[in-house]
Structure formats: structure tokens, C-alpha cells
Length: 407
Ligand code: SF4
Image (cartoon, rainbow, N blue to C red):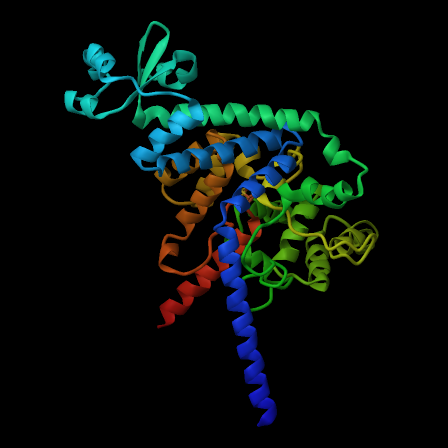
């Protein structure tokens, strides 16, 4: 009895400590300095090469634009003045060009209410190209509701320049300074890390029962497109090349497949080689992934960024991200073959791929395949960021559906 009471007290203490920690974490995260610090840490990591810079620019510009769009009219006006040093035109100037402003799909009342900025037209090329502004003597007259485009373009240009500068002065990342060498590996690999508030994939494959060599093929419909393609490539070719073995092997490890089961799974599928060849050529690599050979590093599954920015597959390879590495026609045919949604759904996914929004295309695929996901509490934070998150959420969704059907 006494032991039971002490255990209850310990649990209470643990709960208190956890809620205190969560409270502190919330306070920390609501501090804008944390946001600023993470932005600059990411700059250091993502300045390393052209493709990383492009990806980072796209994400940060989208975030910047989203934040501006959420500002009140008054705060947006302040931002325009302070960030772009643009002042609104006065009433006299506005009246003198009122009829011209009305030609931009605005009523007289709307023009009277709106604030306009006079901007060198070179800073508003997107708006000029789509005829959304009145241009006169080298200046574009931009309505406040459209000024977000200009601020975002300015942010993007400045960030791009700073990333290039940072990369060209990259001494920090290669410095022999002990402090720099301590954080260099972190910055160098940050783009391939999984950021998740969920338990690590190894501990939470998302399955209520353990994944085994026998159940992997049955689970293929729960996998994102990249992993489904690896599974079907493996079944077709009876083997996988190095890139595919790494990407799929680590994904399965993250999904909870144990080392023994991984060895059984790959040997069972690698029928294009003899058992002896498998032991000699492939089993070392699988044990290595599990940290049982070589440097005994605990390798983690690849994130979407790593797969998308990794080496493109060549003939006979099955690794990579289909949204990035397949052409639009190939992707469209594949989605149709897999019966993904309606033709409109598939067109929406392919259109995201065409505009280089590969991870959004993958998220859209997930939404289409899990139509009632909103009614569940399944965390979706990393769907489209990490293949294991896609898989985990998909498995949880189907288990949730099965449980609801029983009731
Ligand atoms: Fe796989 Fe990520 Fe590409 Fe989706 S976006 S197919 S999860 S690599």
C-alpha cells in the first residue's frame, strides 16, 4: 500500500513538472526573439547551396506574405512606411487621377476609401504585368490592398542577396574554431532533420501492432507516393539500388521495423540475388542503417527536404520524390493508376507539382485519400514534411475509421 501511495505521489510530481515545463516552453515560444533567432539559424543552414536557398526563399517569402495579409489595415500602413519607406499619396493627387484609378476594377467609393502609394514602376513589375496598377511618368499607383506583393518582393530580393553573401563568406561553416566546429554538423544537416512534437518515429511507427516483414506490403497503401513507388519497384525488380535501399530502409526503420525483420523483409524480396550474395552485398548495409556496423551512428529516416534536394533518380532507380522527379504526365498517369481521387483532385495535385510546390502536392494527395481527417484529432503537422509522418497519420486514420465502423 505504502509503495502504491509513493508511486502515485511520484506520478503527481512528474505531471506537475511536465505542465510547468510545457508552460515555460509556451512562454519561450511566444517570445518574438525565439522566432528571430530561428530565422537566422535557418539562414545559416539554408545558404549552403542554390537549391536549399531557393527552397528557403520560397518558404520564408510565403510566411512573410501570410503575416502581412493578417495585419490590420492600420498596421499594414505602418509596415509600408517603415519597411519600404513609401508614403501614401495625398488627397489632391488622388483626386487628380481618380478616373484612371477607377479603371482598375474599382468603384468611385472604393477608390475614395482606399489608400494609394506611388512606387517606381520597377518595384511593382508583377502588378504592372497583370495590369493591376495605374502607371504614370515612371510611377505605379498601388492600392494598399495590393501593396503586400511589393513588400514581399522586396523581402525576397533582400533575403536572396543576404543568403548569397552568407554563402560566399562561408568561413563560419568551415571554421576551425572549436565553437563553430561544435555547431557546424547541426547547421550542415539541419535541412534534413525532422522537427516534430510527436514521439520519434522509431518509437511510434503509428501502428497499434508492430510492423513486420510480412505486413510491410499490406501497408503500402498507407505510404506516401515516394515509398509506394519504392515498394512496387522492389516487387518488380526483385532488388533495389543503393539510393532506394537507403531511402526505403530508413523509412521502414522509422516506421518501427526491427533490424531482424528488416533483414527478413529485404532478403525475402531480393530474389534477383542468391542468399549468399544477399548476405555478402546487402545485409551489412542494412545493419549499418541500424547502427550495428561501421561508426554505429543511429541513422534517421530522410525528410522530404532531403529527398527532394537529394540526387535525382536515373534509369532503374526508384528513390526520390515523385512530385519533384517525375514529369507532370508521368505523375498524372501514376495518380490515375492508383485511383487517387477524382480527375479534378488529380489535376489540382499536378498543378501544385507544376508550380514546384512538391510538398503541398503531397499534402493535397493526403487530404484526398483521407477525406474525414478533419473530424479526427490525428496530428498532421509533418505530413508533407516527412514521409514517416504521412505514413503514421494514414495508419492512425484507418485505425480510427475501423474503430468507428465497429461502434
Ligand atoms: Fe515522399 Fe515527401 Fe515527396 Fe511526399 S513530399 S512523396 S512524403 S518525399
